[in-house]
Image 1 (cartoon, rainbow, N blue to C red):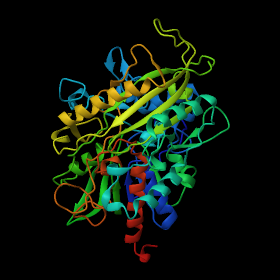
Image 2: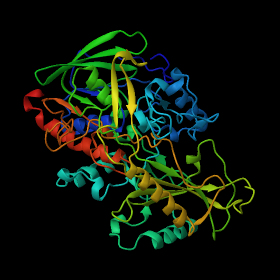
Image 3: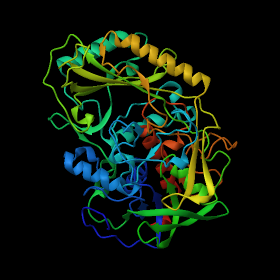
Length: 516
């Protein structure tokens, strides 16, 4: 494969498959794995627009040493020519985080950093965002949950956590983490049920006995499919799905294109799953002239507020530094969403100690936490992705323009979150100068949702049914964060994997025994 650091040859594409999966992130991988377990006679073709980065399909690059991690991240994005930065800024300008790339300027509308989602970023590599993510897997609560799935969601969420390898024991307890949890519990636990109290963040990883766990990636979800050759499973990297072929409510196949030669290939499929993220899933449907009224609308992001504090009343530790601040993690605590008093999701990440003295603040060599908070947002049809019928992007797909903004209620919610963070932080420590709570540019969360949203009835306000099957189609499913129809504050990956578990069960149920 051209550009593949592991020298694996491009496998010839099959002319047909029982199931075509577009996208190789955690959700697409869930379909492949669940179908492999439930119906191993089915052939599955998975296509991915970007390159393979690791020996094991879709491994989390955070497990690599610093040099190999940087090489993998560069391979994923060097074709864009964009700068990347761990902080989301480079030279005073917005920059994508390593391994991802921003939508081009042509895809941004508006003048301020909350209009048009200027920090919207994508990935294009085997594993999708699962090759780069921070692995937080909180369970949604209250109005974050999808009401019409109450009978099936919890079981599916448990399965999602198994597939992702979720644990609350990623990091060992320390005196600092115990004291921090006690302080936060005193602030937040009163009146909450046990499962919504301050607790270790559920993380997709495996404890190693060392400072950091082994972080889960798509290879974790794929399990036995992540290595070696498999007769019934093929993953085609650097292959773009340009169009789905369909007639009378049934998809019959797709047109695939080689990223390098632009040569096209027709593949026939009995079922198609589009799991290409919340922006490119509706993009492919639009390109295929599948255009339900709600397609690309109700775009939902999670306004993200960040800050950094030095803890007080704890023993000083050795100073630490790293290329990626996530390497310094020594614990993550979760303050769950809980209505009506706390319509937020908060994660408190212990990131070692500051190695520098900051003038005017007594913070040298004190334990550091980043205090991050996500809020819910008003879900509005006017927040949407627009697709061009005349202009194409770098992948030969309809160019995208994002229309997005904050409502008055959104701004009030954000202001409340910032005020509360300042008041609550006083019990914990001291903000670093310049690290007081601040709202990041829209799109920074990478948690875009709603653009192929699920609905209980086909009333024009949703794209798919409770099984993630596109309204009006027998054999077309959509998947990923874009399916989530509710206003959420918590990280959505595990929820999206749970919805994919339900959808893959439905798909397997549609397969007749005569398909063997």
